[in-house]
Amino acid sequence: SISSLSHQSMPSEILLKIFAYLDAVNLLCVGCVNRRFYHLASDNFIWVRIYSTAFSPKRSNWKVNSVEKTAVSVNLLSLEDKEAGYWKKEYIVKQIASVKATVARLLKPVNPYTGLPVKIKEALRVSGLGWVIILRDKSGKEYITEHVRLSVNDTSVSVVWYGKNWPHLATLSTLDLCGVTPVFMDRYKSPTKTGPRWRSLIARYSLSDLTETTLMGCDGLIQVFCLSPGLLVGLWKRDEELAFVMANLHLHQLMERSTLGSATTPYELPPHSPFLDDAPEYGLHGYQLHVDLHSGDISYLCGTFHNLFSKKEYIENGYVKLVVISFDNNTQHVPLIGKVGLSWRTNIFEGCIKSCSVMDVTLLDDSGKPFWCFSSPVCMRPSTSPCDTCDFLGQRYCVDYVDSEGRVHLDLVWIEETKEYFVVNLALYLSVAKINHWFGTE
Ligand SMILES: *[C@@H]1O[C@H](CO)[C@@H](O)[C@H](O)[C@H]1NC(C)=O
Ligand SMILES: CC(=O)N[C@H]1CO[C@H](CO)[C@@H](O)[C@@H]1O
Image 1: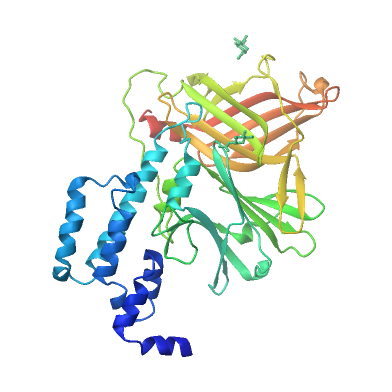
Image 2 (image 1 turned 90 degrees about the vertical axis):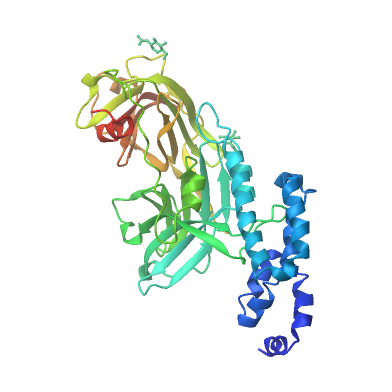
């Protein structure tokens, strides 16, 4: 263009004067224009000023100690000795390290009921972390969409995307869910979407899985599908095109999963190192469950259950059964609060999928470490199996969830008199392989 031509012919001294007004993110952007701009935008005099402003002792949050202070002033004198781009690199390295240190500090305090970080909102703000979905068509072309809405709860984050210009579903093959973090975060500004960002793949979903088997429910306008792990996809009933996508992200290791993966490979959680114990029932007791059945900010069932245990006799078909709410003990039965439904909203329409909700499960082991965690859409369905001892109570429903680590089963009864659902049974089935792997048992 004409304007870039005139920039090209500008003398270097003038360009340097202009660049001196830019912040770090913008300097890195202009550095991408061409080789000459890259060289000029790496200028040590410009970057040493950015460095000392960012890490000056006045910004006490960064905790620059006095040794480093002197280091900055001494190095100012010897700028000429440094190779080109030295201060830019110093700034980048230190900036990334300070954001990391601040985030690590924020993630330390945990909620005793959930074992999960309590300052997740602050950690998200400091790191600038956000999530995108990447729709990929059959020729490999990518469509990146920034999230529209995000809500943080005690155990999960739900993130929603919708858009007017999404490609036709028939042309698409996969959907990638990725965490994106700006390479530089200025904690005094909100993150920009134009600066350089890291991308960390969390999960890849195949859109050919939007079939009868993953269909979860519908209302007048849309049908919703549940793709594992934790993704809800809404299609317009009218033309079967994408209406919205909602990701449910459990907070356990969410920061790591959203920042430490690569653009093509998800971050793998570090293996749990078993703590050796010879007790014969080891791995079968001392569990704590926190369960939350919710939609957005409305919670239908939220509770913490301590001292859950199993016995060797309860091991069946490769699963250990933990009874949380027992049918036989009616003091444990609890009602669902409110009218269960999963609310959705796009720029024009909104609705509610009856009987569906999001289930967050956080199961801690006997040392309080998160053992099994997920956040996923679930749906209440009429029970088909007859039950002699409970059918007289009312119409029965159940909620089932299953993944590679275990299963959750809930039985509910509709009580006509009080117009409430009562949970009369809640059981977890943990994979024996997972338990043995975790505790180093056999
Ligand atoms: C029934 O459940 C309550 C509450 O969890 C518990 O205190 C009680 O011991 C249970 N009763 C039996 C018979 O298991
Ligand atoms: C951290 C947070 O925002 N927690 C909210 C989760 O949702 C419940 C309502 O279900 C709120 O009361 C919490 O404040």
